[in-house]
Image (cartoon, rainbow, N blue to C red):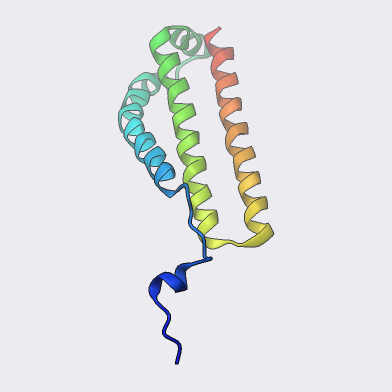
Length: 123
């Protein structure tokens, strides 16, 4: 019969080391999105169905452009963090690494595309 303590069972299994930091980033981005989503709906909502000239004139103003840019950045950062946790929980090995790399590329690519489109509209 082996008398192994809980500490001895846990030695060598390692720790996440970044769990607290990741949790705080998710919390901060969640609170930021609580503020940004209504502001985004206020800034973007009236332009649904409007002509291209009206949309360009609307996003040439600073408030809608800044709110939309912040929404794109914070939203895709939150998405990236959330999907990374999902992948880490449900896949292992090389598949995990490849999925995380692909998800990061998709997230930053979508963020860059959104910001590029916004700059094209605003300028």
